[in-house]
Amino acid sequence: MSQSSRPVVQVVTPEPVVEGAGVHLRRSIGTRGLDHLDPFLLLDHFESVNPADYEAGFPYHPHRGIETVTIVRQGEVRHGDSLGHRGTIGAGDIQWMTSGSGILHEEMPQVRAEGIAGLQLWLNLPAREKMSRPKYRDLGGAQLTETGTDGGATIRVIAGEAGDGRLVGPVEGLAVAPKFVDVRLPPGTTFRETVPRGHTTFAYVDQGVVRFGPEQTPAHAPALVVFGDGDVVEASAGPGGGRFLLAAARPLHEPIARYGPFVMNTRAEIEQTLADLRTGNFIRREPRDE
Image (cartoon, rainbow, N blue to C red; front, side, top):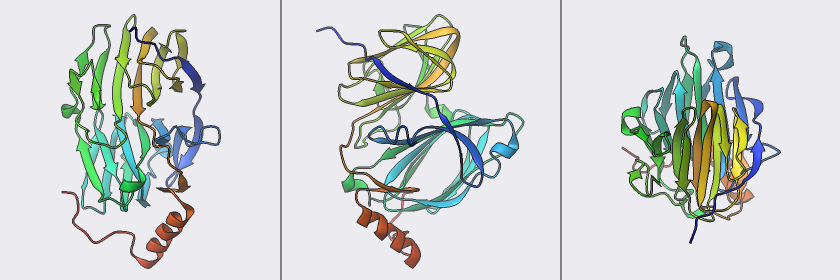
């Protein structure tokens, strides 16, 4: 049976927003126009060489019920959390944090000549895992090997499998079976990757121009490309090449109740979260991730 190419059903231009202590971002998921793409809750793109746009950063703040994935393209981000992790992530590095029952963390972009650039995604956790033990993964660029494809693209697999199972990302075993592939397309190259039917799938173009799907729909950075169902995502480079993140995951089909950095299933659970914050019970006293 021949595989069908996933069509482009929507191209979204990110909206400017200001978050944290005054960080200027572009947001494409988590807006009035696109509240979520189950199980993806938020997608922010940060990129600037002006320190005033980012140096205030994201001082200590709480999360519950989600996973956050931060991909640094350029510059450096200092981080710390209530699990005791401290460090910095730089160009090519990724931070994958499972907030579970509750975590406090800070992300502080460092002022450097090259500025800062990257992406942050929020993934929903299923109801049964929302109060699970928090976890943290710091994935250095060296753990994400760049591999050339037959079409001339260069890819890094962050989560899931690619290349018909020949390439496996370091992040595995998650409920929504995410596939995250970082794709570079030099001029004149193409990319083709299978994605399970029924999985929510998008591409975020943050460099250049990339054409997607059977209609060769162009997407000029910055742009979010949402796909319909099918078996394969197809892409080709514009004249100057391009770069995008391909993301896919199994939808949860569960109710969503959100309040800022907290995402649960019911309003009562949000109220309990706020009560936990007020009474000092937000951080659970249990063994922590090492």
